[in-house]
Amino acid sequence: MCGIFGIINDKNNQAAQTVLEGLKKLEYRGYDSWGISIIPQNQKEIQVDKHIGKIGEAKTNLPKGLIALGHTRWATHGGVTDNNAHPHLDCTKKIAVIHNGVVENYQEIKVELLQKGHKFISETDTEVIAHLIEEKSKSKKINEAIFETFKLLRGSNAIAVLDYNSQTIIACRNGSPLVVGLGQNQYFLASDVPAFLKETNKVYFLNDGEGVILSNSGAKLYDIDSEKEKILTPQILDWKLEDAEKGGYPHFLLKEIYEQLKTIPKTTSINEKEINILAEKINSGYKVVLTGCGTASYCALATKYFFAEQGIDVAVIPSYEFMPFSKFINNKTLVFAISQSGETADTLIAVKQAKKRGAEIVAVINARGSTLERLSNVVLSVGAGPEIAVVSTKAFTSQLSTLYLLTTAVANKYEEGKEKIINLNKVLTKWLNNQLTSQLIMLAKKLMNEEHIYLIGKHINYPATLEFALKIKETSYVHAEPFAAGELKHGVITLIQKGTPCFVLASNDDVRDEVLSSASEIKARGGLIIGVAPFESNEFDVLIKTPDLEDLTIFANIIVGQLLGYYLGVGRGADPDKPRNLAKSVTVK
Ligand code: M6R
Image (tube, rainbow, N blue to C red):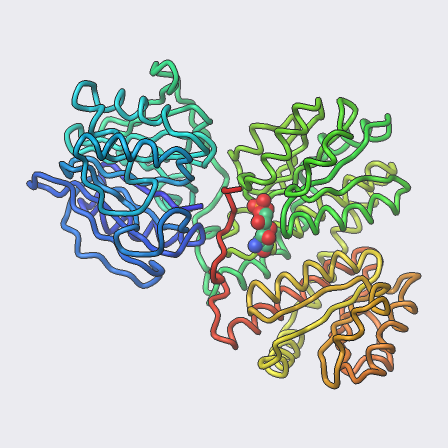
């Protein structure tokens, strides 16, 4: 996935600087390289500035101008080099193209263009788009040339084109997100709203098959197939500028961890109607399948335990393993697709397959206007606001809280569920204090040079260990391996040596003694036992005490993993907001 940002009519005539600042807000979408193209005043061709590496502190010397278009790249085709960074120019330097996606047939297009004499500078699939548009624009209007080019590209793609002659930005979408921002006499195109939120919250999310032309008189929407104009109906988002700023925190990750104190309780005031309708359906015999990737799949697994508490058996299928099991899906299945971004390719593929089998799709999502939202019959929008850090935190707890409420609604205990979430929040607010932070910083220092950490948990604390471990791995690059406590004696115990750190996640539930007995088996082999639990025990060498929240204790147990991952990452010199090799949402298969 990549970040796209363009502006028309920059109010300060500094379009390149505006795009640079906006791209910094999208860096979470890709940080292998960045680049900006501009139509400079009084010059005859487009100018480009592009470099490998993060955009973080970057500056650009591009000249003044009203129109610019830029990109942050997460590399797919072609290595991470200056030449492969976007934008890519055509031979005349009048057309600059940026792109999010993979052009599956780019090789065959390239061969034809080479035969026609086009010169290529990069190894990317994207560059063929610029030359193909150039070729077609010899006999057609630029918008026709772009729409026709786009129709020839195979795969899921979004493109944005800066055209010198018409002084426009023209974009097309099929599978990768694009949003138009309508400011006061300034118009924006981006892959996500934070890029222009400072200027406007009046937006239009493009659907697949739609194109847009931005000129100094505004935005015009098109159906790409028919090339006919459509009515563009914007919406006003309730996002505020602070949502996309660090707000005094050193990193977005830390800000978003603390924001959970607002985002978790917010889930009790949204979706009630939809949740009750879904609960009725489940009680009338619909089978539930939960799917997602990464953190979202751990949310699915935790929800399975919550459903089981209410006497309902549901299936969890990680989206990337969906196909063999899709034959068990039919028109009496509710598929809950969990996703922060709503753009994860594996999740979308699973959902499309489930739809083919007649299932009803419920999207449990955070980002608005996504592909998943459009594919779904019902949307449970979890309302956590923009999640900028690549590592997911607040979106996860909001998804889990939303789905927890659903499980209580199924048992006719929705009001009780709401009370429990509100109480959870009160307790978390007291507990998340400086004393806890100091304890976690000390623990992070102690673990700083460890290369292997193990985690165990049982029942509802098992998915908690998966999420806890992922936070440690993503943020600090320490190898953290989670196990169901019961698995330990079946082989894993060989990994324990003197001093091996082992986290034991527990709640005050009916399996706490079993977990403690697994802990004692590790301890007997010399392991260092770090308890994350609401009680003390002789088995723990160190205890991070979490509040006793019954079945909701896992929220606190997981927050310990989020914070510890953060402090370990900072201590080990990693960038907590942008872990190496990762993108915020994985829009390729
Ligand atoms: O946007 P999604 O929730 O669909 O993304 C799914 C995963 O890619 C995501 O949760 C990933 O595992 C994160 N890096 C977790 O922090």
